Length: 105
Image (cartoon, rainbow, N blue to C red; front, side, top):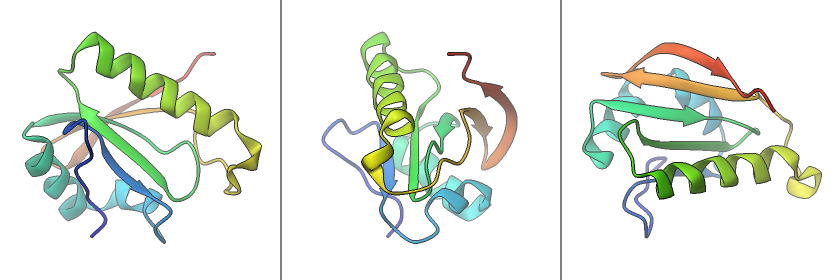
């Protein structure tokens, strides 16, 4: 499955799976992520091909910091082996992208 629950029970990570970054455009995938994360609103990033990371929009400061750190590590690590996709964040509600915010650093 492209949607997985990890130890944090908050990140939805689809790493190293074919077309996982493209799942950001798939409403049924996003609805599944909403269900797993138990939230109607999520923030997503696809820093590199095959790397989709989502968290609930209403997350603790610690989780948000870890989300940014993970995203920045993936974006900056050229040894990762996959092409960069986009330097920013998508805000998703009810399976649909509502807005995009570029990462300004």
